[in-house]
Length: 248
Image (cartoon, rainbow, N blue to C red):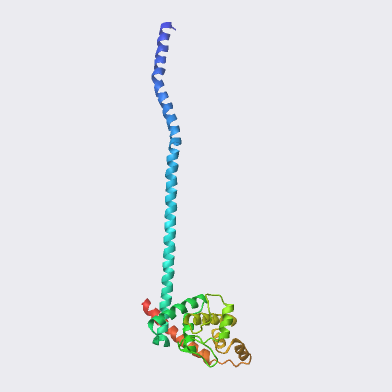
């Protein structure tokens, strides 16, 4: 091959490679820069991510607090409705003669204690009506005192066995104290009679020992229990009628 021709070819090849070399350097430089970008961006990305996680955490706490507030409000609203229902039942009983503020306070105590002992508040109302006709200073010939006609000995026994918010037993004429002890006593008798309301009421009237003795002899006196249950059933009908009217 002609030496001169070969030299020309080599010069052209050299010029070609020289002409394309800068783009290769630029590409390498660009690739190098791109590989560094993640390291440069990491602190910023981490900061944004941390801020995002903090925002999520704060929002979750806010939602949790709102949920607790709604739950607390709903619970308070439900309790208020129960108190109003008990107050309505009292207004349908002989307690209607009491001053409205006294009746409402009584409704609060009865609702609280009935809920605490899982007893229908209407049963407590019926029991009070038959026992004392809502006279908080009532005193029987046997020494039973107050709204639910508790004997001091029975009150003391229940106070020792029960620790559900009963702080004192000295004044059985005090409405709250009497209802707390009386409801706790009814709870005790219901458990003792395996949930038999009739037997528990008979035991409330004549004492559990006498009730079991009469039961053994097939001589259970039902006059008292029937009287309480009659008032109880009447109150249930009136409350049911009110609930039905509200739903319509």
